[in-house]
Image (cartoon, rainbow, N blue to C red; front, side):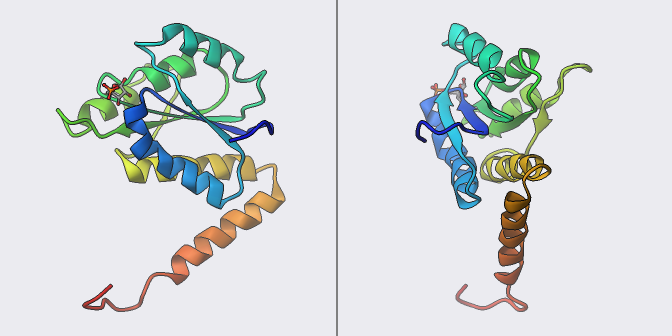
Length: 165
Ligand code: RP5
């Protein structure tokens, strides 16, 4: 975003993941949470992954959101190299509709956790909300903003369906 210290890093394996991961970024923005967006590929830029993950804590990040598709090794490899909590977002793949991404991310061996979200937009949005909930534990103002976000969401739900939503 800018040169301010960011609490959250949103990393993704490819530019093609941005259409999904932008929903995480937009949710963090709506909650006023500073974040950085980076393309870091476990396969195409392994050195960049190593440098990012090893340096993430010193860089001041407190939560990492990692989105990837297909053979989605990015969240798990990142989690292996940092003590910072990692939330993994399975990006919907063309070949297998994201089931490959989901299984690649969720089946971590005991000892290295990745908090795995749903495939696609819902997962990206909820990864941001989980990141917000973690940060809100030590930030009362953010906790109030998160409460307000949820109250507004509740208020938008109509009591009855209409023909023209
Ligand atoms: C993964 O491969 C990326 O996370 C992306 O979801 C998938 C396809 O990447 P592109 O071929 O579109 O760059 O590493």
